[in-house]
Amino acid sequence: GINTPSFNGTKIKLIDLATRTSGLPSLPSNFNVDKEPPFGEYSTQSLYEYLNSYQLTRSSGKKIEYSNVGIGLLGLILSQNTHKPYSELLNIYIYTPLKLKNTFILSKDLLKKPNLATGYEDGKVADYWTWTEDSALAPAGGLVSSGEDLLHFLSAQFDSKQSIKWRNAVVNSRASLKQKEDGSGSLGLGWNI
Image (tube, rainbow, N blue to C red):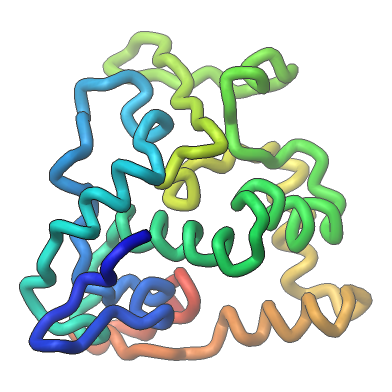
């Protein structure tokens, strides 16, 4: 298990993780950026070790700062509370209801899927970043999708024929939960509004 990092006795809340105001850094100090693939091999155990030793440097819930650690932790909490792997939750609540046939967390066994776009870095073909079922940071960037699936997802944002559960989720995801410090807008669940 983990000890939730805190500041002056105040612990991080789920809403802080979802609105990028947790106070957790972008990357954990025990993350090896030289490892290939860097994110895919970062395990749940590594995240536990990091969080059990981390002390927040400020109160959560106030300053907006992107955090791969925070998004990874949110995915881990969702998985633990439902007793289902994160990838299965995506399948149950997003891929299947929206009929997304080419959206998934890219694992080594899925590298052979047709139509994966070729990535480039410094003008050279880049290796794909792959993820395992135990990749703690998969929620922060493990998804790949096709253009067609992205259009399905976009269309579902405005489709009144979707289930009431889905429509409520869309409305809730767009609700303004935190104002940006510079006054340029607000944050919903995981996105800028």
